[in-house]
Every structure is written in structure tokens, then in C-alpha cells.
Length: 196
Length: 386
Image (cartoon, helix red, strand yellow):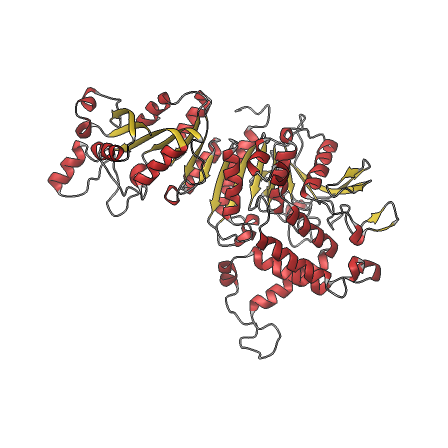
């Protein structure tokens, strides 16, 4: 399982009701259903991912996050999760607000554009970073709203969103000392647990 | 000559008639003292009776879902694209049951049957049957076939409504429910189209108050018109445009009131064919069953509480250009299921064919359908990788 998913699953209580925004092929929900007896749904728009979820027995609903989440009631889920999709929605701030409305708790993970490699790439090559971790070219990418950890935390501060917990990892290892030392420079993926 | 049929066809099939003597009390308050159901089955029922799939038909459908009645048949059953060996509803794995619903005109007891109490044809006196009544009659059929719990109940359009009703009325008797291109109830616009169809039929001079058969005639013009209107609602603007455009039949305008455009002659042909094979009283009855369908009505008009009692898993599928039962209508079902905390998956298939898309082998639709049915197969008790 992906490093961020590995950590998230530890944060989710057995039997919780979970909504996973941009659930991909349903790895997280599939794991949580089997090992923690959670009951949940994934939202996805990629046809291949949807079919993969259906085959795997993951409850997947075809729904575009950019068209809103008004069909879900306030506090109707214990946890609303969004992994690696914040940077791909049109209005990350609104999606975050909606997640906090629907879920008692919200977990968000996203890639850190402030990571030293991205900074290095932009500073010395003068071009938008392309790497194994961020493999897209600027003109053909699902990622339209990159941010750094500091940017995200500023948004939370402006919106009175309380950060319960933050873990920073790189794509292979978990939570190394360097990530803790200087997360906005050395961490590749941040996992935030936030509430209102 | 089964070798004449495609390898993924169920081949030559034969309908069976099941007679029921136990009276069936209907929603309208009347009852049927005895009745027949015409049924086709494909594949083999396992020894536990746990691999059965029920297919519910839509407005003009019947029990002939797949395969051929004779080697000379030009067309297979109406959902042959989805039912057969290796197809989404795989007859190598499932025992598939399809019937003609009560009130139908393809062999099951309906308006053109003889009323055993009077010795005369029911005609317009055939009691109004509802989706709920159909499901009750299907449950008796399941009893007769030794099926305690369906692996899945599957239906498109009005068939999807029956599948949903199954989940509500007999929660313990199905493990999966597939609701395709359907709606939780008709909209005013849907009812309006049905009313146009009924009006066309009942105002046809040959309708004779529904006693047309006693006079050796039938309301051909009315049925034609009903079907033409219906057919327009099954197709999308794009589908019609792609198929007919403004193509002229004779290459030039005729400057008379005959059919100039291809689309006109197509509709006439569809109406004509349909009017010869479908009973007018059945058409009236089926459209009423559609109009009356509203499973939430008994639960304080709350679809969530209606679906709260369900125990099965759901797949809901809609098609982008379906304007008869649009994706928004399917979403109502999905949202209610999610609000009730029920297991549901939903896909909105991009397809230009309109409502009719649910009958077509659209690749993404077939992938989803097949993927879900593989899950249904895995959930058959006793299946290894359970």
C-alpha cells in the first residue's frame, strides 16, 4: 500500500463510516473494509478506476468532486478522506469546507510542492518540476493547484480549521527524522488530520 | 441446429408455462384466483439453488431474454447482448430466470386471457397490476423453482424498478440488486408521455372500450402512435441525428404529407411492427404500472426509509444521454442508498444512445456489468474465493 495510505489506515477507527474522495482503484477502502470493518464509499471519475473498484467489491460512486458534494448530509460520515487529489480539484478550499461539513473528521494528503527537489528544479532549470514523484508536464496534468505545506496550513488558519495531527513522509520511507526537522523542505507527502 | 448460433449465445430456447392456483391479492384490492406465468431459463441451477439470477423486463419486454426460439429466428431475445456463455450475465455460472409479467401479452395471464370466473376474455376488466404485484408473483415463481434467495435481481428501466421493489419487499431473498437506467418514480413529464400514449390508444375508434378482440380488430393507429412517441423518448437527439439526420427517403422533398424524411418512415415502421405484436390493453396496463410506481410512498414519501430495510448490495447504472430516466434520477436512488448506509456502486456511462443504451453492448457498460456480476458470482455461498 502507498506510504500515505499506510498511515491513514492507522488513524481510522474500526467500524467507521468513511467517504474517500478520489478513491482511485479503491486500495484504501478495500483494506479498511477487510481489516477494520469500515463501511464506506469512494468517489471517482476515472472509468477504469471505477470498474476496478466494482470488480474488487469496493463501493464506488461516479461523482465529480468539482461539481460539489451537496448530495451528502452534514456529519453523515465519521471520516472523509482525500488522498493526493487536493491539488487536482478546481477549488481546493471549497472541497475542504465540504469535507469538514460532511465528516466529523477529515484527512487530507497531498504532495509538497515546497519539497527541496521541486524548489531545486524550478530554481536551477527554470522549469516546472517533472519527476518520478510528480511525473506530469505542466500542460497535461491533473494537478492544477499545487501547494506547499505552509500554504495549506495558512489556508487552515484563515478558515479556522483546526489541524489535529500532521505527519510528513517521503514516497518510500515513513516519517524520517529529516521530515520532522524541516518538513516544508524535506517532506514529500503530508498527511493532515483536520476538524472544525 | 445449435451450431448455427454464435458461440456466446444460449442457442435454442423454449419457454415453459407455470400455473398458479393460489389466489394473488393485488394492490388494487382485487385478486387473481389463478394465473399462468411464461418463463424462460438459461444455465443450470446448482444443488443449493443459490446461483439464480432473475431478469425483470421493461415496458414492452417479455420472457424471451436470450437465444432463439427457432433456427429461422432473425433476432435473438431482447437482452442477448448481456446474457449468454461468457457474457456479463454468464449462463455458465448462473441459472437465469426471465418471465413475462402478469398483464403481459406474451403468454402470461393478461388482458387477452380468459377469466376463469366468467369464461370470457378479461379485456379491459383485467385488474390493474403494480410493480409490487409483479414482484409478489415473481416470489411465488422463485418458490416454485426452489430458489430461496436470488444471487441477483437485475432490471433496466421498469425492470430496474422491479429489482428495487424486490430489495424492499423481500430483503432476505436477494444478495445483489442491479438497477439500470431506472428511476425511483416517474416525473410529471414521464407520466405526461404515458398519458399521450394511452390517449392515442383509448381514443382510437377501433379500441371499442378495450373489447376490440371480441370484434376481431385492434386499435392499430393508437398503438402505432403510442409506440412512436415512446420510441422518441428512448433515443437521444444525437442518436437520432447520427442515424437519420435530415436524410430524405426519395432524395427530394415530395411536397405532400407523406413521409419525406427517413426518421419519419423509421418511426412509422417501428410503430407498425409494434402494433402487430403488442396488445393495446397490456400497453395501457404497463404504462399505468410505471406511473404508479413509487416505493417511497408507503414510507412517508421518504426513499431513504424505504431503502433502509434492504439487505442486499446494489449496482446502479445510468447513461449520459438518457433523458427518459436521466442520470439525475439514478442519483436519487444512489443518494438515498448512501444516506441509508447501504452498499452501492454507481456508474454513469457516457453513451450517445439515450435510454435504449441499456440494451446495447457498450464496452464500458459491459465491463462494469461483467465486473459486478463476477462479484455476484464470488458471493454465491460455497464459492471458493469467498
